[in-house]
Image (cartoon, rainbow, N blue to C red):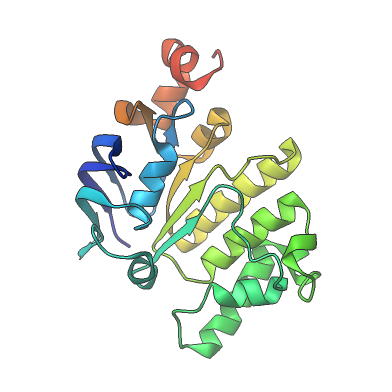
Length: 238
Protein backbone atom coordinates (compact mmCIF):
# COMPACT_ATOMS: atom_id res chain seq x y z
CA UNK A 1 0.00 0.00 0.00
CA UNK A 2 1.14 3.53 -0.77
CA UNK A 3 0.40 7.00 0.57
CA UNK A 4 -0.73 9.64 -1.91
CA UNK A 5 1.18 12.88 -1.32
CA UNK A 6 0.25 16.01 -3.28
CA UNK A 7 2.48 19.06 -2.86
CA UNK A 8 1.83 22.61 -4.10
CA UNK A 9 -0.17 21.37 -7.09
CA UNK A 10 -1.35 23.84 -9.71
CA UNK A 11 -3.25 22.93 -12.87
CA UNK A 12 -5.59 24.35 -15.48
CA UNK A 13 -6.55 24.51 -19.13
CA UNK A 14 -4.50 26.65 -21.47
CA UNK A 15 -4.04 30.04 -19.83
CA UNK A 16 -6.85 29.41 -17.35
CA UNK A 17 -5.44 28.32 -14.00
CA UNK A 18 -7.92 26.28 -11.93
CA UNK A 19 -5.93 24.80 -9.04
CA UNK A 20 -3.69 26.98 -6.88
CA UNK A 21 -1.15 25.28 -4.62
CA UNK A 22 -3.08 22.19 -3.53
CA UNK A 23 -1.30 20.12 -0.86
CA UNK A 24 -2.76 17.05 0.81
CA UNK A 25 -1.86 13.55 1.95
CA UNK A 26 -4.09 10.50 1.78
CA UNK A 27 -2.90 7.57 3.84
CA UNK A 28 -2.56 4.17 2.20
CA UNK A 29 -5.88 2.37 2.26
CA UNK A 30 -7.89 5.46 3.25
CA UNK A 31 -10.93 7.07 1.63
CA UNK A 32 -10.64 10.81 1.08
CA UNK A 33 -13.67 12.94 0.13
CA UNK A 34 -13.16 16.07 -1.99
CA UNK A 35 -16.06 18.48 -1.50
CA UNK A 36 -17.02 21.97 -2.53
CA UNK A 37 -19.32 24.00 -4.81
CA UNK A 38 -19.50 23.67 -8.58
CA UNK A 39 -16.48 25.22 -10.25
CA UNK A 40 -14.26 24.75 -7.22
CA UNK A 41 -11.72 22.63 -9.14
CA UNK A 42 -12.66 19.18 -7.84
CA UNK A 43 -12.79 17.48 -11.25
CA UNK A 44 -9.59 19.23 -12.32
CA UNK A 45 -7.87 17.83 -9.24
CA UNK A 46 -8.78 14.27 -10.20
CA UNK A 47 -7.71 14.91 -13.79
CA UNK A 48 -4.37 16.22 -12.57
CA UNK A 49 -3.88 13.13 -10.39
CA UNK A 50 -4.57 10.84 -13.37
CA UNK A 51 -2.44 12.79 -15.85
CA UNK A 52 -5.33 14.11 -17.93
CA UNK A 53 -4.36 17.76 -17.47
CA UNK A 54 -0.96 19.34 -17.17
CA UNK A 55 0.02 20.13 -13.64
CA UNK A 56 2.89 21.68 -11.73
CA UNK A 57 3.92 20.49 -8.31
CA UNK A 58 4.45 17.09 -6.75
CA UNK A 59 2.25 14.02 -6.91
CA UNK A 60 3.69 10.89 -5.32
CA UNK A 61 2.10 7.49 -4.85
CA UNK A 62 4.42 5.59 -2.56
CA UNK A 63 7.85 5.78 -4.19
CA UNK A 64 6.51 6.68 -7.65
CA UNK A 65 6.42 10.27 -8.88
CA UNK A 66 3.25 10.75 -10.92
CA UNK A 67 3.49 14.42 -11.93
CA UNK A 68 4.25 14.96 -15.60
CA UNK A 69 3.53 11.39 -16.66
CA UNK A 70 0.84 10.50 -19.24
CA UNK A 71 -2.35 8.65 -18.28
CA UNK A 72 -1.28 5.29 -19.72
CA UNK A 73 1.89 5.33 -17.61
CA UNK A 74 -0.09 6.23 -14.52
CA UNK A 75 -2.49 3.36 -15.21
CA UNK A 76 0.48 0.98 -15.21
CA UNK A 77 1.54 2.49 -11.89
CA UNK A 78 -1.87 1.65 -10.44
CA UNK A 79 -3.98 4.80 -10.89
CA UNK A 80 -7.58 4.16 -12.02
CA UNK A 81 -9.88 7.07 -12.83
CA UNK A 82 -13.67 6.76 -13.15
CA UNK A 83 -14.69 10.09 -14.70
CA UNK A 84 -17.95 11.96 -14.27
CA UNK A 85 -20.57 10.56 -16.65
CA UNK A 86 -19.48 6.88 -16.37
CA UNK A 87 -17.04 6.77 -19.31
CA UNK A 88 -18.05 3.30 -20.52
CA UNK A 89 -17.48 2.20 -24.12
CA UNK A 90 -21.14 2.01 -25.07
CA UNK A 91 -20.90 -0.13 -28.27
CA UNK A 92 -18.87 -2.80 -26.47
CA UNK A 93 -20.33 -5.53 -24.29
CA UNK A 94 -20.09 -5.59 -20.52
CA UNK A 95 -17.40 -8.27 -20.67
CA UNK A 96 -15.39 -6.37 -23.29
CA UNK A 97 -15.50 -3.23 -21.15
CA UNK A 98 -14.27 -5.14 -18.12
CA UNK A 99 -11.44 -6.79 -20.04
CA UNK A 100 -10.36 -3.38 -21.35
CA UNK A 101 -9.79 -2.41 -17.73
CA UNK A 102 -7.06 -5.05 -17.58
CA UNK A 103 -5.30 -3.93 -20.79
CA UNK A 104 -2.03 -3.23 -18.97
CA UNK A 105 -1.88 -6.75 -17.49
CA UNK A 106 -0.48 -9.98 -18.89
CA UNK A 107 -1.45 -12.34 -16.05
CA UNK A 108 -4.43 -14.05 -17.72
CA UNK A 109 -5.25 -16.33 -14.80
CA UNK A 110 -5.29 -13.43 -12.37
CA UNK A 111 -7.41 -11.40 -14.81
CA UNK A 112 -9.96 -14.23 -14.91
CA UNK A 113 -9.97 -14.34 -11.10
CA UNK A 114 -10.50 -10.58 -10.97
CA UNK A 115 -13.47 -10.86 -13.33
CA UNK A 116 -15.04 -13.17 -10.76
CA UNK A 117 -14.13 -10.68 -8.04
CA UNK A 118 -15.91 -7.87 -9.93
CA UNK A 119 -18.97 -10.09 -10.46
CA UNK A 120 -19.04 -10.74 -6.72
CA UNK A 121 -19.18 -6.99 -6.05
CA UNK A 122 -21.64 -6.36 -8.91
CA UNK A 123 -23.70 -9.55 -9.50
CA UNK A 124 -25.95 -7.80 -12.03
CA UNK A 125 -23.01 -7.41 -14.41
CA UNK A 126 -22.62 -11.18 -14.66
CA UNK A 127 -26.19 -11.40 -15.98
CA UNK A 128 -25.39 -8.76 -18.66
CA UNK A 129 -22.06 -10.06 -19.99
CA UNK A 130 -22.96 -10.05 -23.69
CA UNK A 131 -25.15 -6.97 -23.47
CA UNK A 132 -23.94 -3.68 -24.96
CA UNK A 133 -22.88 -1.23 -22.27
CA UNK A 134 -25.03 1.48 -23.82
CA UNK A 135 -28.18 -0.54 -23.15
CA UNK A 136 -27.60 -0.69 -19.39
CA UNK A 137 -29.36 1.52 -16.89
CA UNK A 138 -27.49 4.49 -15.45
CA UNK A 139 -26.77 2.63 -12.24
CA UNK A 140 -25.54 -0.45 -14.09
CA UNK A 141 -23.27 1.70 -16.27
CA UNK A 142 -21.75 3.24 -13.15
CA UNK A 143 -21.21 -0.24 -11.70
CA UNK A 144 -19.54 -1.22 -14.97
CA UNK A 145 -17.29 1.84 -14.91
CA UNK A 146 -16.14 1.08 -11.37
CA UNK A 147 -15.79 -2.62 -12.17
CA UNK A 148 -13.60 -1.81 -15.17
CA UNK A 149 -11.40 0.37 -12.95
CA UNK A 150 -11.06 -2.49 -10.46
CA UNK A 151 -9.78 -4.75 -13.23
CA UNK A 152 -6.63 -2.64 -13.21
CA UNK A 153 -5.98 -3.80 -9.64
CA UNK A 154 -5.47 -0.13 -8.71
CA UNK A 155 -3.48 1.21 -5.83
CA UNK A 156 -5.37 4.50 -6.18
CA UNK A 157 -9.02 4.73 -7.29
CA UNK A 158 -10.32 8.17 -8.34
CA UNK A 159 -14.11 8.57 -8.48
CA UNK A 160 -15.72 11.68 -9.94
CA UNK A 161 -19.37 12.22 -8.95
CA UNK A 162 -20.33 8.52 -8.83
CA UNK A 163 -23.89 9.36 -7.71
CA UNK A 164 -24.63 11.76 -10.60
CA UNK A 165 -28.07 11.07 -12.06
CA UNK A 166 -28.70 7.96 -9.97
CA UNK A 167 -31.62 7.09 -7.72
CA UNK A 168 -30.88 7.33 -3.98
CA UNK A 169 -31.18 3.57 -3.45
CA UNK A 170 -28.68 2.84 -6.25
CA UNK A 171 -26.34 5.53 -4.93
CA UNK A 172 -26.32 4.05 -1.43
CA UNK A 173 -25.55 0.61 -2.85
CA UNK A 174 -22.66 1.98 -4.91
CA UNK A 175 -21.16 3.69 -1.89
CA UNK A 176 -21.55 0.49 0.13
CA UNK A 177 -19.60 -1.38 -2.53
CA UNK A 178 -16.87 1.30 -2.70
CA UNK A 179 -16.51 1.02 1.07
CA UNK A 180 -16.29 -2.79 0.77
CA UNK A 181 -13.63 -2.56 -1.95
CA UNK A 182 -11.62 -0.19 0.22
CA UNK A 183 -11.90 -2.45 3.27
CA UNK A 184 -11.21 -5.74 1.48
CA UNK A 185 -8.61 -4.64 -1.09
CA UNK A 186 -7.10 -1.76 0.94
CA UNK A 187 -7.37 0.39 -2.16
CA UNK A 188 -6.80 4.09 -1.55
CA UNK A 189 -9.85 6.05 -2.78
CA UNK A 190 -10.28 9.74 -3.60
CA UNK A 191 -13.93 10.57 -4.28
CA UNK A 192 -15.40 13.82 -5.57
CA UNK A 193 -19.07 13.93 -4.67
CA UNK A 194 -21.90 16.49 -4.45
CA UNK A 195 -23.75 14.30 -1.94
CA UNK A 196 -21.51 15.35 0.92
CA UNK A 197 -23.42 13.38 3.54
CA UNK A 198 -22.86 10.08 1.74
CA UNK A 199 -19.22 10.81 0.91
CA UNK A 200 -18.39 11.79 4.48
CA UNK A 201 -20.16 8.68 5.71
CA UNK A 202 -17.55 6.39 4.12
CA UNK A 203 -14.45 8.63 4.24
CA UNK A 204 -11.77 8.93 6.89
CA UNK A 205 -10.74 12.44 5.84
CA UNK A 206 -12.06 15.27 3.69
CA UNK A 207 -10.94 18.46 2.01
CA UNK A 208 -13.20 21.31 0.96
CA UNK A 209 -12.20 23.22 -2.20
CA UNK A 210 -13.26 26.72 -3.19
CA UNK A 211 -11.95 28.59 -6.25
CA UNK A 212 -9.15 26.08 -6.69
CA UNK A 213 -7.83 26.21 -3.14
CA UNK A 214 -8.31 24.02 -0.10
CA UNK A 215 -10.23 26.07 2.43
CA UNK A 216 -10.80 23.35 5.00
CA UNK A 217 -9.31 19.96 5.87
CA UNK A 218 -10.04 17.50 8.63
CA UNK A 219 -11.45 14.15 9.50
CA UNK A 220 -14.76 13.33 7.86
CA UNK A 221 -16.44 13.32 11.26
CA UNK A 222 -15.14 16.79 12.13
CA UNK A 223 -16.31 18.32 8.88
CA UNK A 224 -19.68 16.61 8.98
CA UNK A 225 -20.32 17.82 12.54
CA UNK A 226 -19.46 21.48 11.92
CA UNK A 227 -22.72 23.35 11.30
CA UNK A 228 -21.09 26.46 9.84
CA UNK A 229 -19.03 24.37 7.44
CA UNK A 230 -22.05 22.32 6.46
CA UNK A 231 -24.11 25.40 5.62
CA UNK A 232 -21.31 27.33 3.90
CA UNK A 233 -19.75 24.61 1.77
CA UNK A 234 -21.77 21.42 1.82
CA UNK A 235 -25.32 22.63 1.32
CA UNK A 236 -27.06 21.07 4.29
CA UNK A 237 -27.66 21.67 8.01
CA UNK A 238 -26.40 19.32 10.72
